Image (cartoon, rainbow, N blue to C red):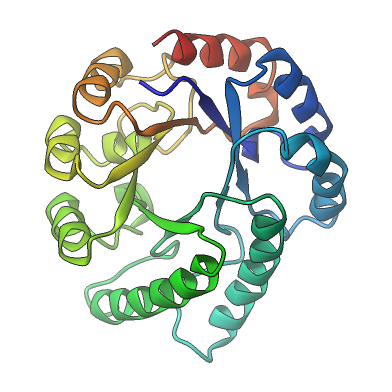
Length: 262
């Protein structure tokens, strides 16, 4: 297993970004960060700039914009233009911090039978554009499984996602929380895509809601997931992805230490 644990910065957002250096000092050489692009927040860029000297001391990747962004939007539409504004900001700081990869959601909005094919076509075109933009400095694009049944925003079911990733040769990030909320067969998912899985998002839920609970708080048997990861994809990055500010603190530190102990 990787000797480094990664933390998605959504748990810090803007108001707690100043705590990132404390984590870097506490877990010297054993922590990295996946920076969630949150340039929709008025103070995010300023707070990010303050910790750049510290972030330059550890491995960094970026998570593409989720809020105010839609990668299944057609080129030339207002939704596409807004998305690309956020992408250009992300690109700027990904260069500065030598990001190894950027995680992409193929979609964030509701999917219908009438819109599915068009949305997927647009998303694949936009993937190619991002691949070229970020590839200029060696930053890869990881495709993540996204959406939940409750929100009606699943663009691809498990078989479709697996087939597409294999067909396109994508580097893949598996979000185990999303998979669990959609009743996907996670061991099969890992087995089928083991040669392409580069990273995992770790969080838990009740089996329906994408609530991003701590790794042992939900109904998913995270220990069984860890066994599959260790056996089939031991070199994949493990990224703790919590989303609420109150999750930062002793609980996050305990989970970081548990993942490091793996």
